[in-house]
Amino acid sequence: MPDLTITRVFDAPRELVFAAWTDPDQLASWLGPRGYTGSAVTLATRPGGAWRACIRSPGGDEHWMHGVYREVDAPGRLVFTFAWDTEGDLRTETLVTIDFADLDGKTEMTFVQTGFPAAADRDDHHGGWSSCFDDLAGFIHPPTRGHPMTATRHALPEIVSAEEWQAARDALLVKEKEHMKAADHLAAERRRLPMVPFTKAYGFDAADGKKSLLDLFDGRRQLIVYHFMLHPGDEAGCPGCSLLVDNMPHLAHLHARDVTLTVVAPATLAEIERYKTRMGWDVPWVSAHGSDFTEDCGVGAGFGVSVFLRDGDDVYRTYFTSGRGGETFLASHRYLDITPLGRQEAWEEESRGDDAPGSWWRRHDEY
Image (cartoon, rainbow, N blue to C red; front, side):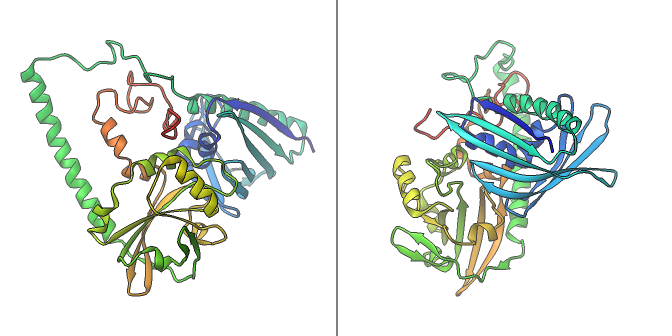
């Protein structure tokens, strides 16, 4: 059977390229040939997990595809089955293998698709994927060094009198208060979510020895776990995860409300300690290497935030978020969002920037 191989080099770290394949919102942003739009993307990025997506043609026709992940090794490799499913017609299943190699901060992506019944099918897919990868390159291109953008007069806010500015500010304040009240109601709903028992005897490696899930509470009733993308063999952690850890608060403020915060990663303890030292972090970390904890939390090869509650010796999971839910914990973004130029990402609004979401993120010692 004819095979398809496409190799591309992207001017971005492989963690960002890998994330563009494994985050539903990001994948929807570039999936599909030129002129098509991605939608309804669902990904369970773990071995045996299913994925499904739809691309819509300029004329509005929907084309559905789906498959199952065979291998997920962040940020180095993805292997999954691929099949079209149009109006109930299950077409030939192929196998996609993608390797992400680090090239001094850039990424060489080798895409291989096998199992085509005929050369014509392979060639059709070559054109489609090549167009997708052109859009992918535009989606993840890195920011310009120095000032991310040069503000033109078109990009600047309108110049008005002090009285006009105050009137506009007062009108926005009404909306800000409504937004805050809505967020308060949402937080109350979050607190009222039901909870599920976590009864498995997980084992974690910590700097001061072996620990159980109950031990991670450190005597407190509530536990927040950040699932960090640092896997066995990684030289460094995910830039986005690193940004989030940089934004973590002084833990005394959480301890005062009976909350413990801990970072958990699938890497070995030695790999974690090495990266912590480089980053200068003192927040508690443990290794889940050899444990089912990360998989049981539904994180797969990605990241997320889990919340647990302890009632005596019984442990329950009460909340989980991932994807853009992680922005909740980025104080740096809250500061950027009150500036005129914002995050300087293309999705925000016209003339405020042209960077792809998260493409400018770096570990704090790499800016």
